[in-house]
Length: 140
Length: 221
Image (tube, rainbow over all chains, first blue to last red; front, side, top):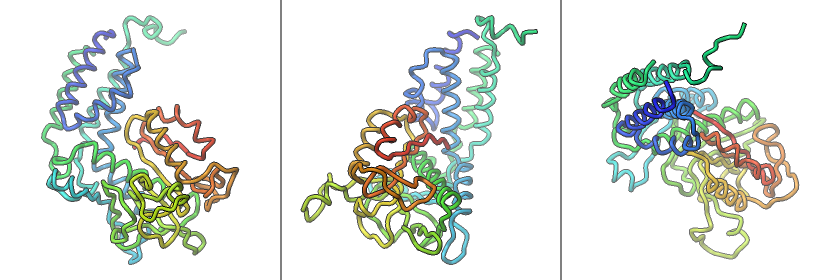
């Protein structure tokens, strides 16, 4: 694939992100990657950051956080640490119709993450035909 | 692999998450809110881990079995659980989240009640034991700010302002810690201040922290 095609794929990916539940992350990632000129590098970086941000919004991340806190914290009653609850402000509660949530009730998206990682590895392993150095293979 | 094949893979991946939101929180709340709090929780777990295993502290969750993070900051509210931090059997302080502290400038003036400019918030605060309401700047042992966004110059200016309102730049002073996060800090009162950021760009802005005693940490979830 050439730079034009990588740019086309990046725009397609961004469009998919903006249409999904992760629409707000496009702005954050784009701000971080906008100074990268090479489309392939920018696409790889965009995907890496997207994977990280999807992962942090999943319940598997909450599991790790609770596990770590459970190992660090004792409770007065010697009961097990229960987890982390997020309390919304009164205005947010009125706007969103929910007053609190626990991190562990966030979505399970491990299969989505696996698919994004697979796409990243395809891009990473794709050789650039315009780069003779990269296509030469190992030197004898 | 061709561009079209890649686009097909991307479309297939995204079709698998369309309508995946089964939980009320994921459906109703903006991702910025849930991910910001998830990052704060992640950093809190790291702070606890470091205090326990690097500094040798004992951490006890008081007044409940769940930690509660709040989306709005305010004074210490002991209706919510907090973490008691002790060392060698002596309590050194208590950890609260999303708390406002009274500034150094407020302490140096004679205002009776604080105005809006007289308090600032930090995501995680370790303060001296037994504090209620807004802790004073001199009550702070460790402050932590969590930034799950791109790191920018304005965030650096913000944290430099926070440091200014926590303590004066002053020599090298012993903190209450022996190892983590710091043994000494160029500040009086000798509070530690940490900035955790998901952005790799945080390293570009970290140098002033060497002078003022702010530790910038690039930490992804």
